Image 1 (cartoon, rainbow, N blue to C red):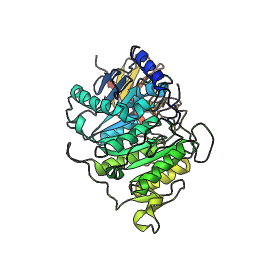
Image 2 (cartoon, rainbow, N blue to C red; image 1 turned 45 degrees about the vertical axis):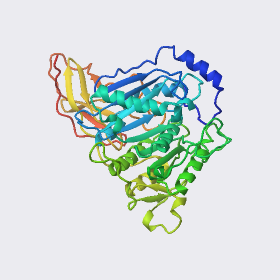
Image 3 (cartoon, rainbow, N blue to C red; image 1 turned 135 degrees about the vertical axis):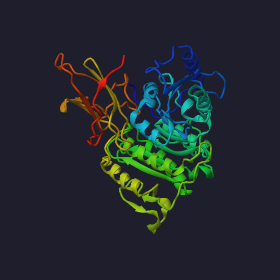
Image 4 (spheres, rainbow, N blue to C red; image 1 turned 90 degrees about the vertical axis):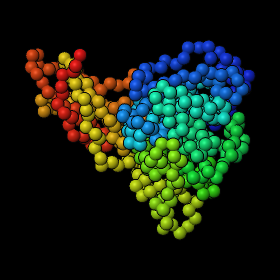
Length: 457
């Protein structure tokens, strides 16, 4: 898969971009698998040739928790730049761990997938002023109709973005601060002042309302913090400038440096998801359609920008605007673990699997992820005894092994891994009972599921 292209590279000439866009608009769309069947919904917008409108096609896939009558918000998982990262966005809404966050808060989980041609200008979508802002807001209307959730265009947003997606998410905060509950910016930030090192990137204005939106700048230490002169070394200077500008004016912004990674996402989800959980818990209104609640400041903690210590804000004697902002003590403890070795702790086991069904020798089940630590694997028991571990060995080249595996932009790999096990060693003619146990990424086990039942035809 092509890795995310740095948003700090110079843009290609506009004439070449126009030609690429015109040719690409006539090519077949991305393979849109997995198919979107309820509770998943998808809309695709074609490329536009009109000035100021999105010049690339885009797929928007949304997941809506079953049983939710009225959504309280939408969580957006935005991939980065480059054709490979764009394609990876097709599975973002299927991520069980991010679904756990959405489910807790009665939110939808939305993942765009821009059909950016190889080597084309990422700024044409990751700067929301180039048409992706309007396309995004239109997709909420379209998906609201498809899903029978007409409130979708009006609910608040929680934004996560990687690389160019971080640029996009930050830009949306600056354009729509009253709509954004919180934003996590992984390895990419918008520009607030003209910078000759970031040619072709237009600066945003910083309104006072944006200072009230909780923000986290998250990047790898190899992106210019401790390692200089390498491919993504420009990420840290851009993040540092963005942090200083926002925090210097009193903004609720922090920095979390991943001590293990470069531009890949690593283990950031084990801090990002609890951090967004804390912000959504504090900010989402009880009733859909009401304005966001102001983020409380009496529980805030402060953290060294590139260090490893924190202090309660009310007890800090120095200048608080020199330190990063964290929402509460729990997040301060998690932040200290993350910046040390990314081993954010967890003491809560995952939910037990449900709907265990047996058809012939094939066992299937359903499971929800643990909010703090996701899902790593499942243990299969036959007649009360250990039978198998699924998968035998988890894969994730970028961090903790997880059940769904992960791509570079923090989305499940294709094809999606099914919750299924075939017992090829079952005794013929003997009726067996099976149970399934979920295991999260810190090794905690759920209680066993109920015994399997025969699958209905």
